[in-house]
Image (cartoon, rainbow, N blue to C red; front, top):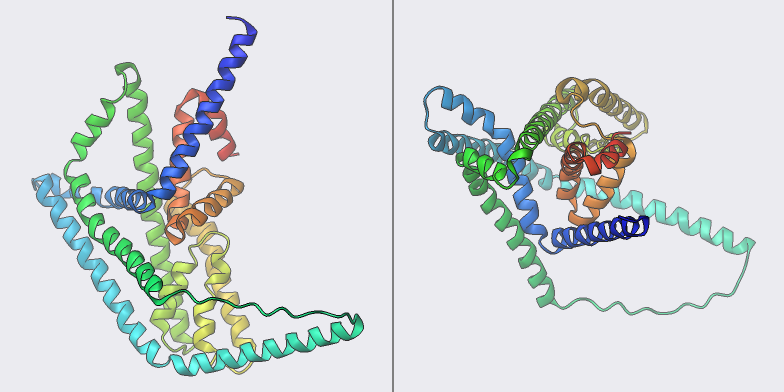
Length: 350
């Protein structure tokens, strides 16, 4: 084979990969509801599978064990949602006093900005013409249709996830063997090792993050209770979950206690203290809890994590932020086990 033919083949392979990548991204965008539901179900199945295996060791049929585990998980989720919504109801009843203070603060900021703008215009006067822009409000029926569509997507996801998780747990071995059967016999050992790596990675990542989130919620609750913050439980749940957001979590975790404390604290010292303590919690979680509980399974550099969060977050919103790191870590494991893609895997962990 000549050098020219090799070059043409390499270029055609690269073009085919780019086209295939574009098709996959387009499918993830247009079929976002289906893909997100499937990926969330896979993560939950990895999380619940050890409990099903534990029941199997006690001679419980796998189908019965999977059903019991899914029902217990649903009961736990419903209980947590009830606790949060019960506290949310009390918070909403007190919302007028918080909103009044927030509106006053926003009005003061607007007034200061207007004064600054007037001073700047005095220093550099210039004629400006004001153009009236008419903003056409969307019709009521279009808003209703949009709301019904989003509600339908949420109901569809919530409805299908438990059934998908149940089916995945029940038919795990059949799915496993069928997946191995898609590859030639000479490649099945490598595929099995790759699937084992993915199992350890995803399970460790999900379990570790849930434990870290629970610890952050607990310590935040104790801290908010000690300083006498109203709605301490609700603020700790929201703050602890926001604290898990990569990079931005250290700042986003301040928002719930700031909103609740804005009607009670009249000077800046409590806000600074809350921000400092929550930042310490965030640093301890990232540098101590995450390595201890999650381990070093997710070998991704900061650039890869940031790009993944930006891409999947813009594509799928909040769910994309949740799935960004597991998806990227899965791609890295696949790249590490495919010889032609190993440079990409090395870049992701550089």
